[in-house]
Amino acid sequence: MARGSSQPIKDDVVVRGRVVANDCLGELPGAVIIDDGSAGIKVMVEAERVTDYLPLYSSVTLYCSGLYIGRQGRGVVVGARPTEDFVVDRIDKKHILDYMAVGDADDGCVPLRRTLAEIKLGDAYRYVVVEGVSVVEEEQGLAWCDRDPLTGFYQNSVRHITDGTDTLPVVVSKECVYAQEALPPHTFRCEAVVDIYEGEIALRITNHRVEQL
Image 1: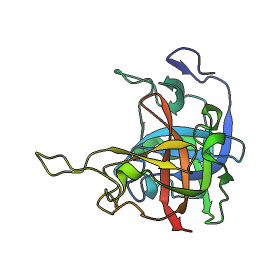
Image 2: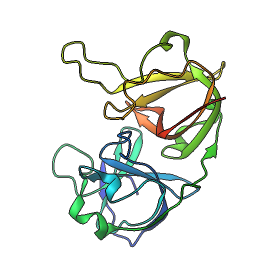
Image 3: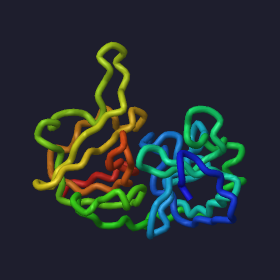
């Protein structure tokens, strides 16, 4: 359906899945990613705490009729009718439950196992786990986010992980609660969603699930 920059969804399309990324730890402000086990979709939402409406790992039924679908770079997003320069607007908090029915949360949501080499554009917004990776040597000792040298505030940052053969960027929101935490110095596994950042495939850690191996 995503033809051109933005299109209204007129058919009674329903998507059912689980919330695999949101802003509960500040990792994905202003959006949720829903994965149904075969693919993922990014839904733009306007609320101070999206997680209060759409908790992490909760089951969600998304009723798409009346929403818009658009291409954001190489990614596809769903949201409200665009009014300015964005391909879709964020769904206002007062309308979230008009378009989404929310069920119970299940912490047993299982990510798709992938190697870095296997992650392709077709995996956009999938919930994945990668194992046996480490931060590239050049970034060892850094925090997850950089600070602005003038203001001291944290900035959205990009880090890189490698399995010794392949490398992928990891995009980190300045709002995440672990922005100041040092990057892991050891080999680890991490659970993430496949995101699109500045037109390229990147990972975005979800629920701070980074475990030493």
